[in-house]
Length: 197
Image 1 (cartoon, rainbow, N blue to C red):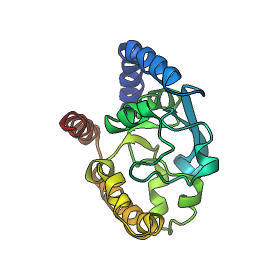
Image 2 (cartoon, rainbow, N blue to C red; image 1 turned 60 degrees about the horizontal axis):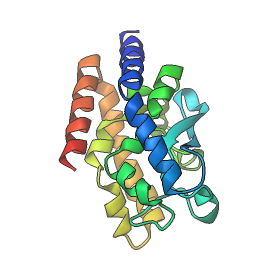
Image 3 (tube, rainbow, N blue to C red; image 1 turned 45 degrees about the horizontal axis):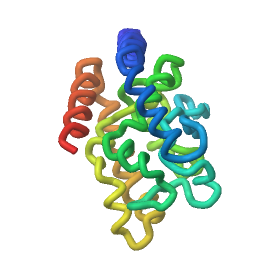
């Protein structure tokens, strides 16, 4: 209850304070390329229930049709402004809307697309017992995941066989000891990692 109240208050305040930034980003996206400002993608939430996750659009509108769901390196589908938004994680800010709606939490295992969740074993599926988050310890540990996959011979296989299981292990360990205080710590670590970029 305390976690949900914290999420709701913090996300609502964040949306209010960041509204000028949202407007500036929206204008930049519309000027950068044709298409909508927001990108909505189906992810798997708590209890295995799918939901639409919001992001600022950083790729061409038909990106998923002409390429895979995995974005690697200097993907040509990424728009000019999209590179900047991704670098500083600004594309993730609209997920504050998902937090207010109750689909997500500020901190929790990052939600995956259905095709990857289908590969989880019984132990790994325990991450679905809680609301997914905007950030988590695994996101901090793998903040350079894009560059890691770009250097892989087979990015898809590397993600499925190495990166995804490692991230799930990190998040399962987080679930064993999580608290409101540890969540605040993860938020601060995330902000520091973004600022360092």
